[in-house]
Image (tube, rainbow, N blue to C red; front, side, top):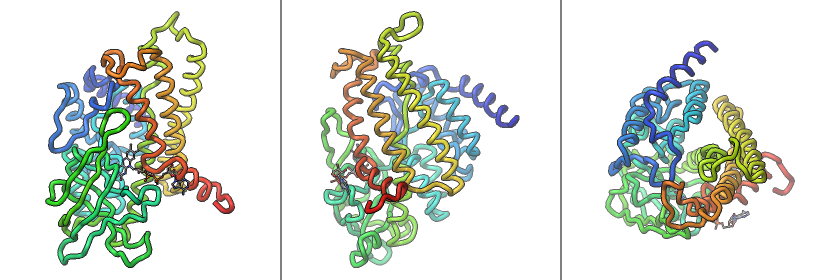
Length: 388
Ligand SMILES: Cc1cc2nc3c(=O)[nH]c(=O)nc-3n(C[C@H](O)[C@H](O)[C@H](O)COP(=O)(O)OP(=O)(O)OC[C@H]3O[C@@H](n4cnc5c(N)ncnc54)[C@H](O)[C@@H]3O)c2cc1C
């Protein structure tokens, strides 16, 4: 316990000294995030310093082993670091599908060579990844995917189409589900492969959304050569890797943001130290209590997963509830900002982009598996309801 207290004090002092002031301000829009990758640029000197300082300590991935570029922290130390980052309002130094999704899958299923090759690059933000799962006829029923990879001796030849591939046009590499044995039953015969988006035959076409943004693409593969060493896990057993990765994606989507009370106070101001609108105050209090309970549930689930005692379906519960919570948060943000929230081209200094962010949350109950599908999983695998 004394060691952990020392760790907390040292961490707090280090963060205070090393997190630049602009990296302690809330994100105003998605453009404020740092995603890394070959073509990455920093928005500010503070962002560059913050990323480089955290990456040098392995704290972009604090709990990954040191030999793979991580910070080597224990679960307890990781919890303390997260708490201190939250307390100071620090931004994430690096947002990355590599960290949230591919990394955990590689740690579990990757070969030693793959771990040594890809994990440090993810930790240092050198490669930006995208996720090639969904297809025009395979979303909730993902195992119906039809993109095929034909065995051509030392490589596969990949042909097909993915859809809703987030940031495919900005990504360097893709982790992708392909059918390697069309004769096997649908969950078998799928493999999980990695390849460079610059490989000849890969092309992307952005899809424009209601929010006016275009975060995802259609992605096409036309005779794309992928070396066989880039299969993760066993050939034709990629479904297992894919499912494991989804549990991490679902936890990631269910993550919550900065305390709403503070955001509302910044937007509306306070009277005698509290928000004047009693109804809004009560709604925010209820939301904060639910968020705190959810954070504890996430931590507890992390412990159970580490001890291999968690029901894998628990990620569906977290994803479902996290999506609802995030939607509630943005509803409250819209209320808190009043008519300012309706501005479409608002000034960044007023916390702008509220309406676009609110619209973006509508996708939370679709991405990473829809809420209806999560409820089916909860009914079947957690509640064990008859006929579910
Ligand atoms: C913001 C966002 C980002 C995304 N990013 C990516 C990405 O990077 N990579 C990627 O591969 N995919 C991505 N997706 C795609 C996402 O995974 C799919 O949209 C999702 O799995 C649902 O598939 P679908 O859109 O084909 O809907 P469908 O599967 O066609 O579902 C349509 C409707 O039917 C309901 N439904 C379907 N089956 C059942 C059932 N058995 N019981 C009850 N209801 C059911 C669904 O809940 C939904 O309401 C993203 C999606 C969004 C919204």
